[in-house]
Image 1 (tube, helix red, strand yellow):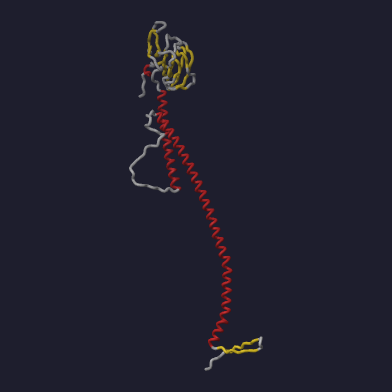
Image 2: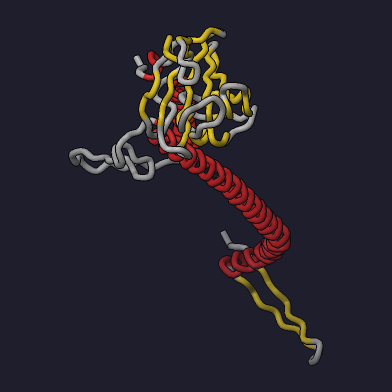
Length: 314
């Protein structure tokens, strides 16, 4: 069987001639592939060009999104830093307040120590309390913000309890001090001696028997006359028979009088403490020499002062 052949005629326009070429089977196949491949190649090139043109906008949008995300993260970080700064400032203020309260507790402790008459150095609030113990290995705790806040809260609660206890102790000590101050006891003079007791005696002016409603303490003129207990001055001035007189009310129905003074040092309404000088010893009024006439009244009735002179706390 004779194979088919393809004849190709080439025309030369310049020389106005033609030429024919016969193609074999393999030549025809190669020519067919070239004719088919050219359109496919053009299509492929167009597709790739289209893909390239689309890639530009897509890549730009992704970059813009990434930049926006980074910007938002920067804003979030700034907010976190600002919040952390505010919390740190709040904790610093809280710590300063706790330190101020601790200073107050130290001052109150020193005050109570003085009131309790403790020996120097026995209970010193100005020094750090002694601490110690055997070494049991290293111990490390990492505090978070919440842990630190909770620890500060517990510390503040302990401080509040301590303040409350110290306030109660101060109140009790103050009440005890007040009771001691209002307790009638001791002599009404700095220095002196008993020159006349309470009760019937021979009157130094008339020579007759008469009731003596007080105790006389003789001493040096101008020496101090002392209040035997805390109280309020209810009367001062010159009184017949008494000379210069000071009268003090101590509460619970007790009133004391101090007579024949050279000079009174207090005025009505003054609050006096136990042992305070209220007058200078003298010999004013019905008196034979420098002394203080000391009287005690209980619920308006004169009583023997000697039991109160020798009186001690139970």
